[in-house]
Image (cartoon, rainbow, N blue to C red; front, side):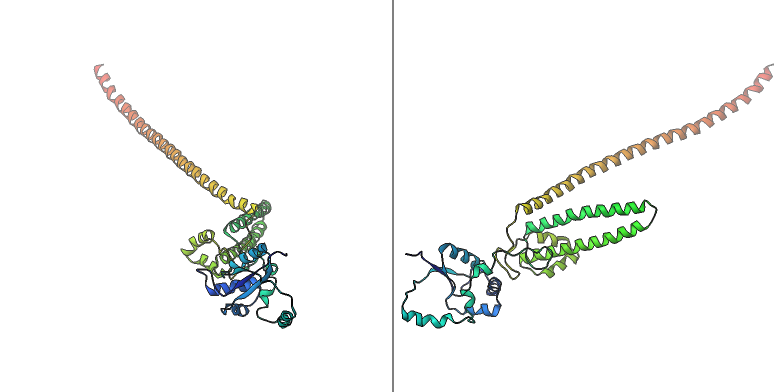
Length: 316
């Protein structure tokens, strides 16, 4: 006796809270088909999306289909009886390659990956929160050494008493900043796609007040668990992604500690400067008093000497 076989059927039902338009778009992305062909699956009739499956394969296909938002189910495959009547009756159905129900009879699992392909330098695709932070950290780590090299080149040319270094350094810095800016936009667009938002919402970063907290929204809002209109979900985060993301914690911790020590150092320098200025102010006042007193004493002595001379001559 052969192992029991199963099929996946769909009657147009949706999972709770899922919009029918979103489900159709997800199915269109999953089947690599247009929405017009997918809409025929929502006519209320029971359609077999996949046949002749083992129980494990049926569970895998069902999980992929349920992520689109539809409410599919697994049913036992009806045993086929081999007789001439069945053969003649089902023979015309095999010769319908252009039938709108052909995609459900196709191999769904092989043509529809469960996860999207990562495209770091494109506007298509999706990335999650951790991968967004990790890629941004890599971009920063790559940019800093390049900035250091450009600075050394500029300083080397400037030391020769020439303005060429400043011009070259300014041009290189401009193109470096432009490249960094464009790549960061691509990362943000893919992060917005993961949330299910349009990439044009990145322009909110340029709006006053809103642009001050919108990057935080991009980093905090979770993405869609299943496929959305921008494609399947991104692959799971690797160990490298998690390590690079954790570097942000170290980065912010260093900034916080540096800010605290910088504040203490500024307060101490200001206190020492005020103390030194107060000492200098006190010594100047004492010198001024000494200078003013000494001429007064000398003038008094000089006035006393002529007064004693007539007294002495009179006595004689």
